[in-house]
Amino acid sequence: MTGPRTVIARLARDHRVARLATVDETGAPHLVPVCYATDGRAYYSPIDAKPKRRPPTELRRLRNIRANPRVALLIDHYEEDWRRLSWVMVQGRAELLDGGPEWAEARALLEAKYPQYRDMPIADAAPMIKIVPERVLDWSATP
Image 1 (cartoon, rainbow, N blue to C red):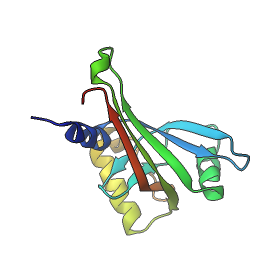
Image 2 (image 1 turned 180 degrees about the vertical axis):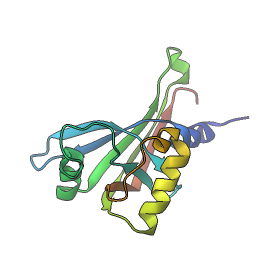
Image 3 (image 1 turned 30 degrees about the horizontal axis):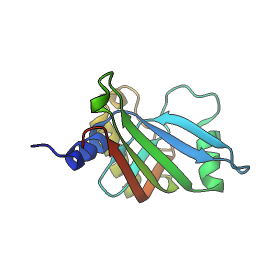
Image 4 (image 1 turned 90 degrees about the horizontal axis):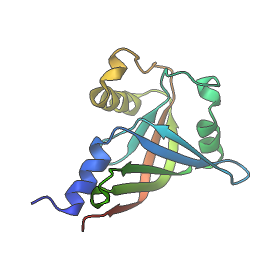
């Protein structure tokens, strides 16, 4: 039988989109949908080639992380059958990776999870957000 912990672990590992929350220097929240992957120890989110309003290095999420590395990552599952709702929230510290072996491992995880990155590669010079969990909260409508 599949228990709630298994469902929550699968959600965190396999779900396709999460919401990344950061705060700016005034304390105002900023929330964006992101692609992500995890190796079981950290969560990684790329700054990829999808169209953006600003140059990638000037994105608000990156400015916010530089000013305050405390972030939250929400991964949720919604269905019209509310007995199947669930979510995982990762609270932790973010850092920006700018290349190196860990960056390459994160890119490999993301490319394995998202076939779209075959046509839109993650550029070698692109920052990668790494989130190290300090607290993980979860909820499932099915006990």
